[in-house]
Length: 297
Image (tube, rainbow, N blue to C red; front, side):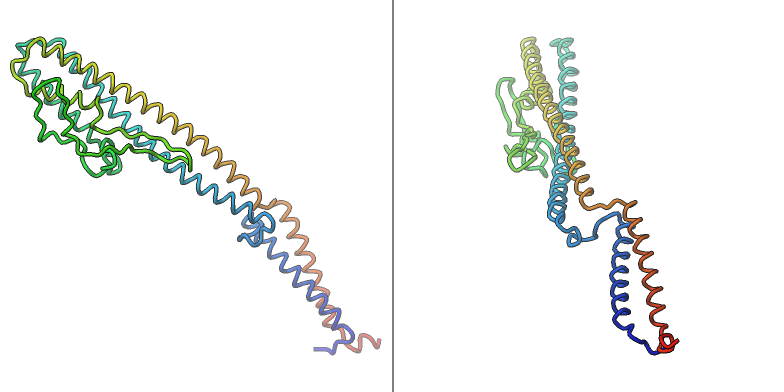
């Protein structure tokens, strides 16, 4: 290589500037490919704290939405089960209206079948959880194996295997929504007592049929009330989820805005840095080719 004459300082300066330009170009190329100011918080400067806070808020909101959606699915299952129970009451009331004291066998068979169906509905499971068991979600809440009904007026919840815990969902640090219904609720106890009596009693009188009909009306009214409340709570959760999704979208957009670059602007900047870098390399090439003879000519 030819001997450099008085170019060392200039060469060093140009080389340093070229290295800085190359670093800026690399940064712009990464920004252009990712669309982000930086791939880590350190490169976000004064926006780092705000972006981190927004991302934490977004994560919490996503978790809250997931929890609410899970509770909503359970409420919808409860709502449907209650609707089926009400239909049972309607069917049996119709048969009672048409029954007479001479149709005991047919009525007993019907009541027994409906009692089994009611038990099945109260033992409804969703995602491995019994919905009407309170906190004992792994235990069937209704077991009629030991139930003996000798009259229409004596309440008996010994069939219930759950506890008195009411399921709820926490929506925020200071807000929760109760939605659980236990199988020992008066509505269900009345229905079970009436069906059990009709399924096992003999020599039913007209007074028995009238009393059973009244109890079924009472049970159905209470079941419909429970269903109405479940519907209101489902609507409350749907509104909450919608509001949270709107908030999540806003927070996510804001975080993205703070962390993102304008691709068009970055592309222009990258092109400028590339041009500067090429000029620097050209200048370096010229400087490193100079020799003493170039200055003596």
